Image (cartoon, rainbow, N blue to C red):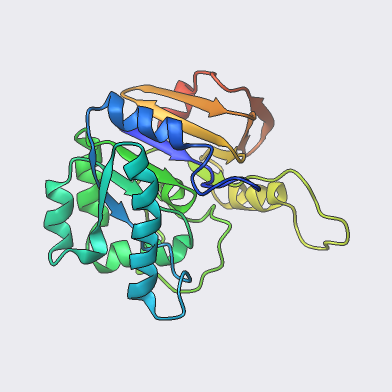
Length: 245
């Protein structure tokens, strides 16, 4: 498989998709594709004119960036037959936003299995934030509020571990709730056989065949039940995460 799994789209003070632009360009160029099917379904609040307008705005926003990179996109929300659009696609990009709504739409439209089949078959897939989260077995390590109930929490299951995008170490002063680490450990108490990776901002995972590597500005945290939490540096080989338990 060919996966580019990005923690976040934008860092403070940067333009949209600023820091990962060169990585997105290199990923699609390496796999010799320029036409990409875009999924805007996580973008639920980009307009007060309704969901369709939000999807249009999201498509325009991503298209402006991708055009600068010599890439072109078409949003799946414009397709009369979304399933056939995925079957005909040369590559996929899945934008961030609310993971629950993204998963809701993929199940509603019958797209989860056809995307999985295409990507397992070699179609390049890039996703940021929610778009990275849904490559996991389940959405249950998202940070998002469940604004809608999907048919299932089951996701694409392209990687056998869970991703927590936007991973934060800090516990803000005056905040009485659980830290991100505590929430992940709660998940592992119920799901002890899974790894969870805390993917910090300005970092991404890239998979090419049987190779998985971390790249970016920061290390990554790896959690597992009854195992000491580890810090993994960029450039490290993460093949052990691909072993199914």
